[in-house]
Length: 461
Ligand SMILES: Cc1ncc(COP(=O)(O)O)c(C=O)c1O
Ligand SMILES: N[C@@H](CCOP(=O)(O)O)C(=O)O
Image (cartoon, rainbow, N blue to C red):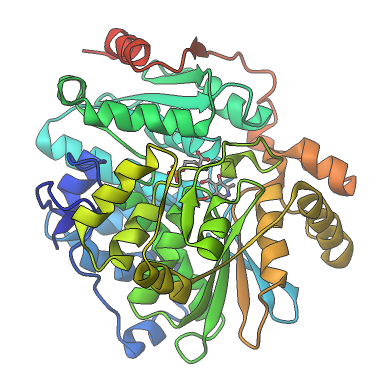
């Protein structure tokens, strides 16, 4: 299996190379040269299998020979052993034909753990074989950072620096990043928003001297391995509700477009998905883009679903690549225009995107109302990101089951939850002392040179 860049000029890589490389050297994102498919019988045979078995079947064709079957199975087994639910990603019924897919039973209580725990294992295996060390730099609006720190803390061959927008993540998210004591992890509070953090991260990848000097690696969803691991729960949940014999739809609370892109890959692999619905908060650039055909940045407005406070949605580039018939030159042109504020998508490409994705948005008020109504109607306490999904999903219900991704545990956002439905969302016992632990954080300007200097000084040689 080979991986190609969405901008068409970076070298083709294997799975392991693409995983360790992160951003392609032409600034693009790696995608598989071809998406492998599973037959109807293959999909039917997943029924009754464990999460780990399905993960192996779904991911194996993407991974190639660098990981043996035995190594891959071991990585998968270790990745999910610490999850707090036996089925890893359980379904909970919300309405007659509406289900929540609970993706928050991992160690940091957000869907990011599904991919991050696995790539933590895959990185370790690959780095040990190669005798290599890397410096991971990540940008986060809250959840990626905590999941990455949890997955890589204490490892000898990895230093981790996480850039988060100062004052724009929840207290629980911040403390998950700032309280680990291991010297190889560093939480950096950036004077800016998430888009600034992600832009500086991409600047570092595009600054080859720095990139090569520190052995830069990325664990944001710019890393294909992150997206791949997220494809698995589309299969487990759809099969639990009758696929391949019956279609299902998904609504996905969306920010950086990685999670819904994983759903698009599942569909390409043969999973019978009818609708893939993008749910945005008031930072609704993706919803506006589908409506108008123009991707126009409007500035990030802080919301009660902070992990989705994003305007430059990284993985949208992967969808555009397919929408433009995999023409990397056109994608590169559009991304260059984005620096100036936005770009207009061609009629053919927007028709393609509208054929694959539907969309909707939830205002702050609607998000709060949805938390309250869901609690009153079902007894389920949901987080604000999930509420954005539920609100939009309710507008897209049909005769096939709708699965809304519950992307984080409500206890990560206790203030919004309490205000909306009067409920206290308690952290699990293993985290009950989170607010007693000492914080370790470095405040940094939104400046590439300052960030690079800090990383060069702080990383272990
Ligand atoms: C809780 C939560 N929900 C939804 C999202 C959006 O996911 P994506 O960025 O993959 O679109 C995020 C951030 O990624 C998140 O942390
Ligand atoms: N919402 C994310 C933003 C980064 O997304 P990623 O999937 O590209 O890592 C977060 O919580 O950090």
